[in-house]
Image 1 (cartoon, helix red, strand yellow):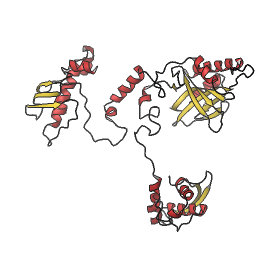
Image 2 (cartoon, one colour):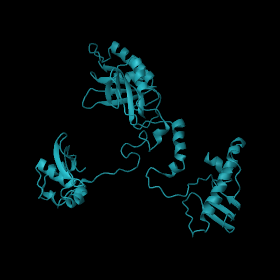
Image 3 (tube, helix red, strand yellow):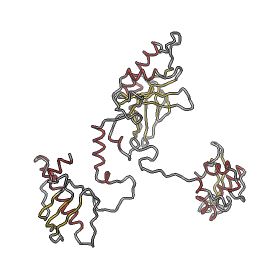
Image 4 (cartoon, one colour):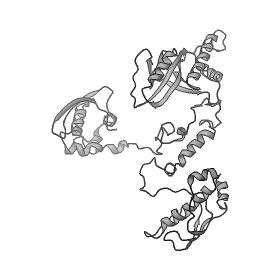
Length: 409
């Protein structure tokens, strides 16, 4: 497509430069200039020297005009007639993109792609014509049949306890009362809301302005394999029941279902199965490919480790503590300024209450503390272990309450 427009613009793909001859737009004095292609070029000069006249009013304006002329007559009637810049000739010009001259954004989620909205078109392009591949083995991901899903579930170890769930809502705001009513009428008795199993006979109230995920509990099963024939095959009645449940879940969930494994109640886990995309070699299943799947600004497409920012902000424990100081003299660096300036303030009293509760000396350097004691300061005490804090606020009032010590980090 780019090569097509290059020829349409009169740009030779082998041409090394963008050549402008006789540019007289605004305060340009009939200048000739040759700009190298495929390089970062910066135009500098005094205010009023013609930088914007050359970049925006000449090069970009001519590129936009040629692009509009390449469209059909029907499309051009909505865009209007564009005047040709005051220039004799421009050679080697490709389709041009202009970014508004405004203050640079310090938001790390703002890029050239998002500002120009090219990123939105690329996400739509990838979602509609892209071919998904397995991130484990690299093979192309294809459609998976319901029988293949049943076989994969029956391949679990004997005695596995599972739930078949049908996804209904994924990360959407609202109370979703109509959805609960519909699945209640459909004959289902349980639902999983935000990871919690609830009974549909109960009144379920959701916060309307928070994101919620809802799945209907279609069936609860224990995987059992026949032991008398020595083959390990599943019992016929279990296989038939599972096949019916899978069909129901796929129909209700729009082609996807979740298998919630509760064999180990302390570590339950989910596995997604989809009629749309599944790798037959390593069992990887992918959700429906959507434009938001390719957005680093959406939780559905962002890297879970860095949230789409490309870098992680972490605390260095070695910098949080000053081992040469005592708790009284500011050994906890993030709290040192406040604890030393206000002896009856919140941070000073928090340190004293924590030290008194856990038996830590206030007058000894942290270098003399054991590793366990320093970890207690950094990461907090045991869950449910509460300390009492009494401090004076900015108004001079004394406040007292109980809380868990969560640590510096």
